[in-house]
Image 1: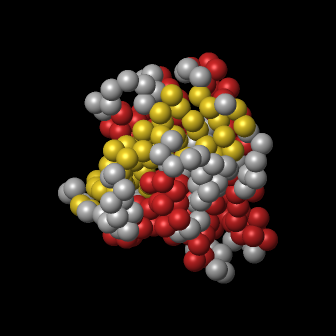
Image 2: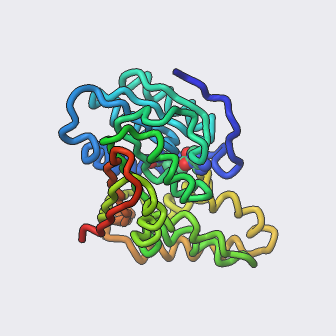
Image 3: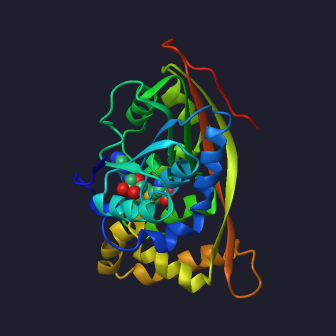
Length: 279
Ligand SMILES: C[S@@+](CC[C@H](N)C(=O)[O-])C[C@H]1O[C@@H](n2cnc3c(N)ncnc32)[C@H](O)[C@@H]1O
């Protein structure tokens, strides 16, 4: 299954996502290993907001039958190329996390690594994730937390805009109370646990250059910042944020990025949720 034509979204189109995103792709290996642990047979797995496909490819390498879905066809093409080189067959579907184009209960496992956090209408997305998971199936959603370095990048840059309110939207998925509220009326039990991934770049300057060029919220607003003559200050603040979190002493950049892993078990149709923070 390869359907890569679709709506796309300007925020995630063009530029080089992988130059930045490959540095945390190993988080997808951890999420996939956790959610597939102990599952018998070749699980049917859906990766929502798959981007260049790190989680979909990790699941395929472990023998799962995988579909990767994303709004942005360009990223799906990169994922499909990588699958040809490195993993088994994966289906790629252009689509929106708010309207998943699959029947109820189509997957044993539905996951997302730093993907659905960027979709609008989180409660609706949560309901869609649960709907397409079979009764007894598993969910795993990884999202940057608001107070971790990855969650602070957008607010650091976008506070230089006149209307910076959108900057903290995606990291709502990194807050346990908010996530539990979205799942509370759904037939699923969720557990939130903190996790982190070590990220490495050759230098702070290199990291700034890949983040300002990669598709996503910062690049989407960069032109407005440039027009206002504020881009240089925003860029300097981004470099300062990286420097403040740097654990390396050799000129490279090494930081630990905090994320929230939401793990869920879908019930047999019973409404209501029992949630726990697991920490
Ligand atoms: C930060 S990237 C994460 C990609 C990948 N999962 C990873 O771990 O590197 C976020 C992805 O979410 C996708 N996305 C944003 N909004 C979406 C939506 N409403 N439905 C599906 N995908 C969406 C973007 O196109 C982008 O590929």
